[in-house]
Image (cartoon, rainbow, N blue to C red; front, side):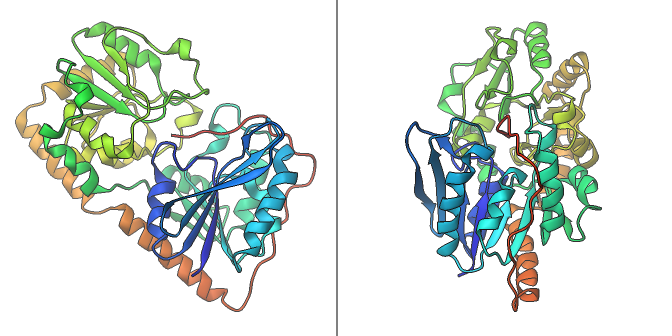
Length: 391
């Protein structure tokens, strides 16, 4: 069985999103070795391995280096670990979610290099200074590049001859559980209606000002925010009105139950560099619950879904859009639900993973008589100053 070694800035047990959806499906055809960013433990060097799924191993490096992300100070430890992983797998596919792991490519004799560009990481808060240089090399090195939405595709398509757009998709069956409103999450039962909810990572892409003004304008609205608050946003900036409820990160299995309890789904993203290229996975997940959706004008949401999503640029307009969503005429609701169902019928994570696999098999067949050496990496001293975290 062919192996895929994945280098990721996201941990497997973090918010369940694109890497987990795709790799759990590709594990039906490949042996997946998922290598996370290292964690710090004084005086210790180790590689812990867990097996959350058949054919899928999650490797968590432990090093005595107290630096974030794939910092250069980790490299002497990571190189040995990755070299040993490479010895156990003959000519693997190497799949990157972060260009910052690119130096480790030299430790493996690889068959193919894949870059699944799910975000413009350089636009996130405090990116490592060398990130753009590494990404430039990765885009030149990769045999296949996938992008997480049309905006990213347009930004990358001229930088590699084999770029493919695979926008965020959805497990419709999972999220349609929310259509049975009797399955509502027990934690919601104490909250009066209406309930307006958001789930996802709360970081620099989240607009606390919009949520604060919503809470002030309508004290009777119960605003539920489900997700981890990460260090890319100052917790002091988060609104704390009594009708705002932070319930922390929720298991993927719990998300349909939350949706079953809500009246409106929210995407109050900040309009800044960090959201310029995002293509929110939750868009389609919300649609599967057949609930009204209100979003700020994220380009991919506007271009792909403005026929079923209320778009509002300012806090005032966002509040008005929520008011409309709560009082939406039945005929408008029915029309939008028909459109949502049509969109959902055209996409799935199963189909996306299958199409990606077709491209992998085609490339493997093309390269079946050859293997690749590690890629050259940018010269000069690395200066990683910050790890990268994502929704």
